[in-house]
Image 1 (cartoon, rainbow, N blue to C red):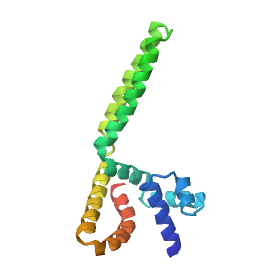
Image 2 (spheres, helix red, strand yellow; image 1 turned 180 degrees about the vertical axis):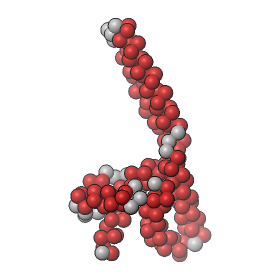
Image 3 (cartoon, rainbow, N blue to C red; image 1 turned 90 degrees about the horizontal axis):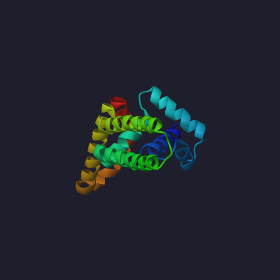
Image 4 (cartoon, helix red, strand yellow; image 1 turned 60 degrees about the vertical axis):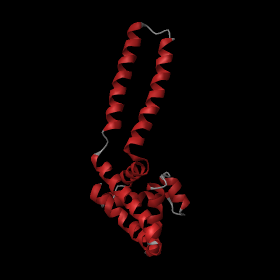
Length: 165
C-alpha cells in the first residue's frame, strides 16, 4: 500500500507541478494510464481536484498577473492577425461586420476572464505561493529540516486542495 501511495503522489506531482499530461505523468512514473486516471477521479471525489491544484500551481509560479498578461498577449496576437485578414478579404461588408462583432465579443470575454479568475483558485495559489516561500526560508535558515518539510508538504498538498478546491 505504501508503494502505491508513493506512486500516486509521484503521478499527482508530475501532473500538478510539472504540468505533464496525465498520460505522460503516468508513463514517467511507471503507472498504467488507467490507474492514474482512476486515482485522479477518486481524488476529485474526495475533494482533491488535480486540475484546480494544477491551475493554482501555475498561478503561484507565475502569478495571476503573469497569466493574465499571457492570455491577453496571445489573444491580441490572434486578434491582430484576424483583423489583417479581414482588411484584405473579399467578404461582403455585412459579413465583415458580423465577424467584427464576434471578435469584439470575444475580446470582452477574454479580458473579463483574464481579470477575474476563480476565487478559490486564486486563494489556493496564494496558499501555495506561501508554502513555496516558507520552503525557501527553511532551505536558507534550517536546511537540515527541509527534507522533512517536503515529505510533509507532499502529504498535505491534497488537503490544501480540498480546502480551497
